Image 1 (cartoon, rainbow, N blue to C red):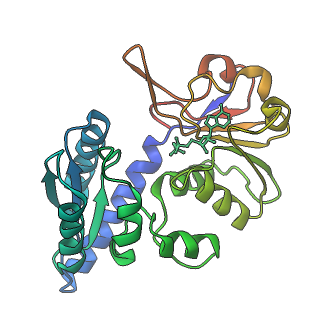
Image 2: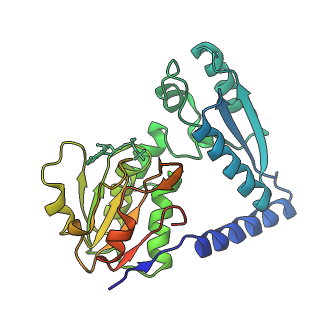
Length: 261
Ligand code: ADP
């Protein structure tokens, strides 16, 4: 058996069309064109690559981009002054701080000081708390994208046994909340989980966001399993996920490719 490949491309095209259409309606009614500030401190290659892909998308949906480039040696006071300025600027509707930040700037500075109203990544305590309580909020895009991908392919979530590997604030933890709100029975695994394999083998939905290439092999999935691989790792110059794609493809019912899922 080979798994169904859950590609994100068709869904992304549809979402971009919906966003472009809603922005068009908004500006026709006299609303301001939305504007996203991306804050890049220093020149980390992963952060720069993420910004390039964001800029490409913004151009396609006609969201204005405000690049904010700060030198790697920016100190916490200067960094916070920039965040506060963006919070208070009415021409900026969203702010995304590119990670990773240099070591001397803890990411908590962003969580604690970014306006929840401009927090498009859904990382501030207000948005995270609202998400975990099931209230309307700005949601982290990666786990929200996972749910939308399952819906796009008509994969049932309610009553499914879901296993999430990883408990980060941007992927694993919010994904577990979103799955629970859709009535899945959710188990969250992390570095100190004992016997990961036997827990994964129970999963109808297996979501992996650990940053550990090859973590999930074919012996860890049951034949009916749907596998969502959120991992983004560079191995020998290639981008790979956390799942042994070639192996698990032969063992599961459906899988997301990396990249392309
Ligand atoms: P991301 O933001 O992509 O979710 P992080 O590096 O912030 O990634 O978090 C990684 C998460 O994955 C942590 O919650 C950690 O406990 C979990 N994790 C990492 N390695 C393993 C592993 N070998 N087994 C199980 N969980 C793991």
